[in-house]
Length: 284
Image (cartoon, rainbow, N blue to C red; front, side, top):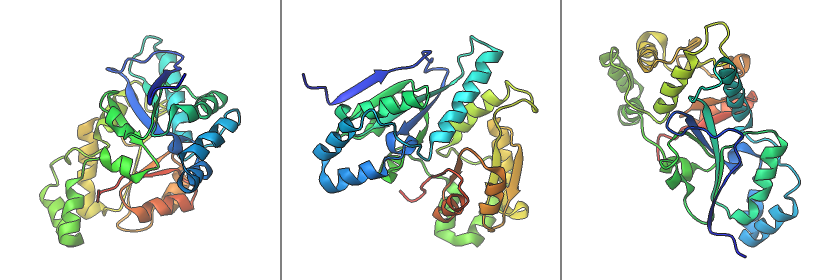
C-alpha cells in the first residue's frame, strides 16, 4: 500500500499544548547532517535518495547545526517540569521535511537513537513544508534551505534603512528612534515567549541565558536594542556592542547553543570558531 504524499507522525512522550507551548520547527537538514544524502538527491534524483535512506534507515545520522540547540531546549523542558509538573509553557519541537514519507524512517530512527523528544514529524513530498508553520503555531523555524526561510520571513526596518542610505543614514535613523522599541522582526515572537519562560527561574538558577552581540556601537546605536529587549520582557545576561569588530572572539568565549545574525560574514565568524549559527536573511 502506498503512503500518502503528506504524512504526520506523532511520537511525543508528553503531548504539548500548541496554544501554550513555544513551538520550534526544524528541517531534517538542520537537525541532522544530511549533506551527503542531499548531494545524492541533487545529482542522482529522488529515487536514488529514497533508496539510500531506506537502505540506511537503521544507521543513525550525525548531528547537524541545530542539534545542540534542540538538546538544550529539551533540557529546559525537564527543568520547567521539575519546578511544575503541570507547566504547559514548554518548548515543542516538530520536524519538517520536503521529502517523501518513504525516506522518513531514517529521520525518526535517528531522533530516537539520539534521545530527542520530537512532537511531530511532517513529511511533505514535493511540496513547500513552510505552509504548515502557521498551522502548528510555530514561533521559530530553522532550516538549511534559504528558500524555505525566505518564505517564512519578515524584514527589519533598520536593515532596510542601512541598505537604502548606508551606515551614516542608519546611525541617524537609530538616533531619531532611540526611545522607540524596534518593530516586529522574525525572532520577536520567539523572544517574547522565551522571556516568559526565563521569568520562571531565578537569575542564578536559570538554564536559559541570552546574550546580545551586535555590530552596533554602544554610543550611537546600542541603546535601542536594549530598550527593545526590555520591552519584549527578555532579560539579557550580557551585551556586547562591537562597533563593527568581528564577533568571533566573543562568541568563542560565550559558546552559545545557537547564534542568530542577518549578516553572512558574522555567520562565517561564528562557524570559524565552531559556534552553531543561523542566518536570518534580510534580502529575500
